Length: 281
Image (cartoon, rainbow, N blue to C red):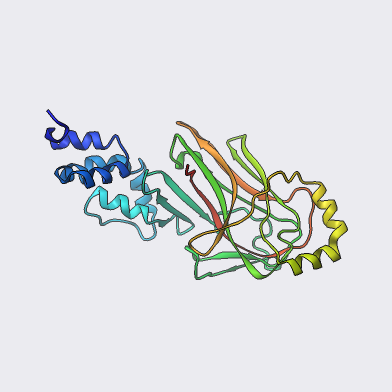
């Protein structure tokens, strides 16, 4: 007996033990397994166990879908959940869960003080609001997510997603420190620069603030400080750190960027949120 001569339900059960990418490849090889490869038996295994709750908390709620396969790919396209304060999607090839916490979901000291931060609608944002730093001397941004909301046996990386306003200043004078904690254990720590200045602006800051900047930089272990990378959606991202979610992990994953070795004035940082997605090899 060959694989293709097995009962349809048996083939569906076998395919459910693979990955969404494997099932799609199987369809390219043989159309004879299409019915099994499209079945709810196979695709329900690729959906997260809490998919029904995710559907109910989506904005707007998801009610209509013809099959579990259709629902799977609908979730791959990303949806807003939790009153529009989080963005959720599935990694298309694996079904791993991904999230972005909006700026409203983050802890930002003085975030509601209009002297320091300005909340506004940004056309390129997936959320109703982003927040722009007007001016502040000490920066801290922290987000947290329950470990149980993420896919088990998965290495994740957390990213701060942001833009730099044209009038930005002080963001790359000294590196900020990043930290990711799973429960009470520090999973990853590092340093990062939030912006790149043009050479003329950098020379001016060095001229006026060189002594102070040297003192501040001496307090920070730079190592291999990370720098921002451009994203396809028009934003930038900076890595906050990576962490592993094991079976049964509970508690909170905390992800933060902060200045703890000194302070200086800065402004022009536009924060969309913190994104958590599986590490790609």
